[in-house]
Image 1 (cartoon, one colour):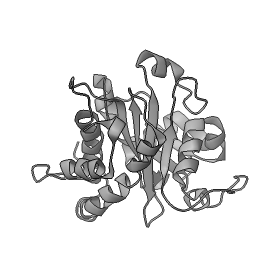
Image 2 (cartoon, one colour):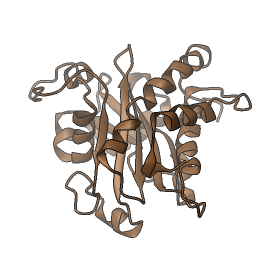
Image 3 (tube, one colour):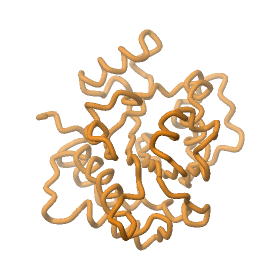
Image 4 (cartoon, one colour):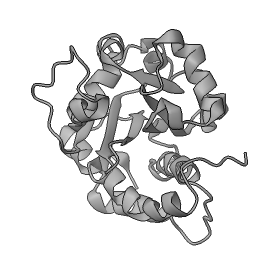
Length: 240
């Protein structure tokens, strides 16, 4: 499959590859990791080189429901800004060109992002991600005072940066230049309990807007198959 010609059929096929019979997941976290890997390994050129530099999956949680390990990491990063009721966007799956990008526990950045008015002002990619995908920020943050909700819809859509180089929404320009990142695409869904589930791909090939639009149903299709994992095993693999 080629990312430059991404179709909705490709999206359905990618999710099928995640949930093949041989993948016996014991948590949603494991399925998220597989999704990140499937996108990296199955979208490439005829030279068998991945068109994805970095593939990532995020999920938002109330701080108080996170495992102790992630609570500690969140507090190390955000300190006293973190409250029991804080919403945290957690890295749940990662796969990419570098070995260190293939295990969320080895990731050096963006493991846990505090979602707040200050975050949305200081981390432009997160703010743009939430806005473009169309999440209702009021629902997500409980109508935190001072956030402008105008123009935010309640449906899922697409996060799209056509040219990553020089984009104000991708501040990590050293990463963009070193790995020749061309475009960034992503999508997400808001789950019934109010959490959000997001996929992001940093690509080494330019993606056209009409092609990027085809990624929109990814997380919705994923969760049609992942709910049974959540009900049977839970979100995290606590045995690791």
